[in-house]
Image (cartoon, rainbow, N blue to C red; front, top):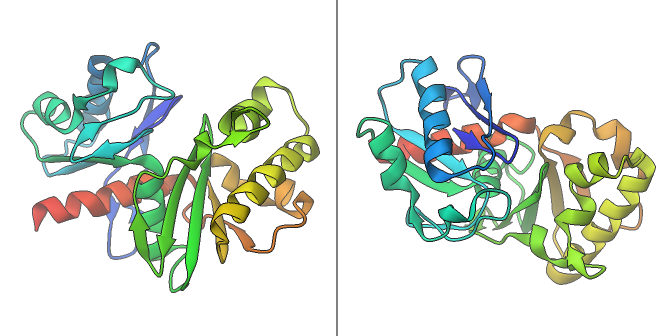
Length: 243
């Protein structure tokens, strides 16, 4: 399961191949995105597959031991909530694990996608309603980095360089790519990564913006799992519950 600012989607996953086993089911994220409202949507998606096993759920914010600690693009009622227990209860007692959405996407890309076999520092950025981040050093995750909230020109970076910022500002690909380039340069200055992996729905259109980004030393590639990476990473976390 992948909870996003605009949509909530999920599917069973074939973890031998790192691919969705069935076509994903998606519903719109309720507004306001309260815990109870979102939990109901998660249950709707899970029930669409008649799934009875453990469930991995991604969340767009900091998550520690199943508790959601921040809520940038959802209702503030998530802050300090035992989200794993809430979702487990709503799903009839199934085992549930909750993790940061970008961390889940990064785990999947390291295991199956663009980061597989890459040594050094790899940073995955999910570009969508906000900007999520997952930082890896030699394949090991540093969780909950939330680099979308770095300051860029006096604002949260995601308010300048997310896909939502592009859409809200009706920006051309070139204009948006310049903003993204400045954000990547800032992240590169802080972390000196060997590789940037860019995920989210926009990863389906790399030819629209990647050729426009200049001056970044690190290699930049689109996520191979594209917008399914979060679901695959969540399923990987759910597998750990079953073992």
